[in-house]
Length: 283
Image (tube, rainbow, N blue to C red; front, side, top):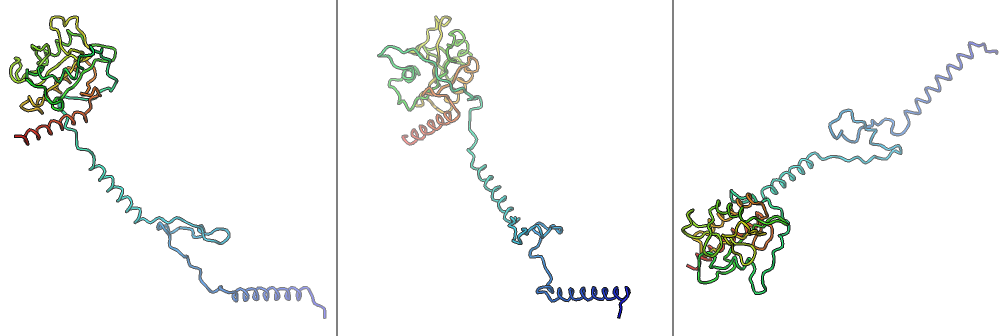
């Protein structure tokens, strides 16, 4: 029996429908086809549009993603803030500097001082001689003497006439030991609070030749055992030296000829307090 074109088309259509049906039946019988795929994790940052496929590599392996623990980050920030607060509280207490003193000094080397005769003593030794502070009979313990040095800038010297004008303006008076003293009263009477000597041997000044005089430095010292209140005397000496320095310039040095700093000034004050305690213990 011969088939026409219409019959052939109907047969092909039937085969196509049968093929589609068989393919669908095969798919429904495949393993795991009835399971619903669920996301294995929730979005980390609350982003509803998080693409879960970004966590997979082309090979099907899981991609390692860093997960931020918000609570741990906040705890770390809190710990760091507490640590910073503790460090701030551990800062050194404010320096109790004299109101008049600004120890912003340039620690350049001290100018060379011409050596004296072999049997002569150094300027610091002259500064420690008791006769310069009122004629006491015995030499005080070196630890009881506080000294400061004001040195002229490198290569320069203090002019005698200018020096005389400045020290007289600061209340120092020329004494019979050929050095200057700061007394309790402005008229040059009362207790000697501290003294000023020449930094060059023998440590004295010639009042009659101050016009031609010059020196690389001057020294100030006080004897604690001769003072009614060593702390008051020291503060006045430090104030006076600072004012002279502002007038003449130069570099303020401690008794070791090192740059005077705030820490050094505090060290002097501590020595005074230790001395006062010893005096009280001995009474």
